[in-house]
Length: 78
Image (cartoon, rainbow, N blue to C red; front, side):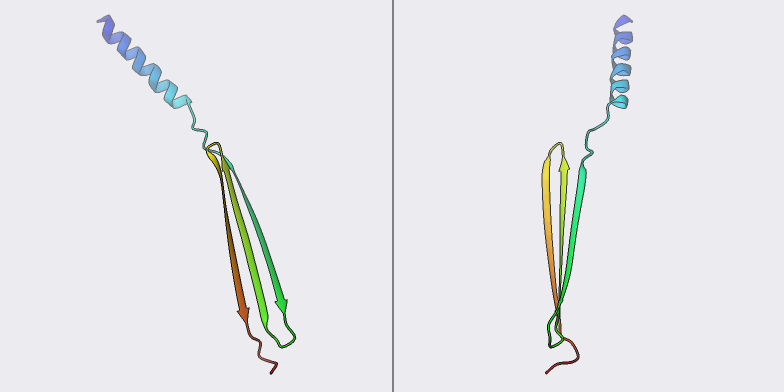
């Protein structure tokens, strides 16, 4: 009988510890976005968008950079 009570107490203690313990997954995220637009004399437009995302957590740091370049021709100029 006492073995059953000891097992019950151990199980209750384990459940309480799991309920109190919180995982430490929280980290920070930094997003940097740069956009520039250039116009040429003949009406051509070039837009460059650069976005960098950096995540840091207790398990390491990860960075991702995306660059998008769009070039369009204007309606004027020969």
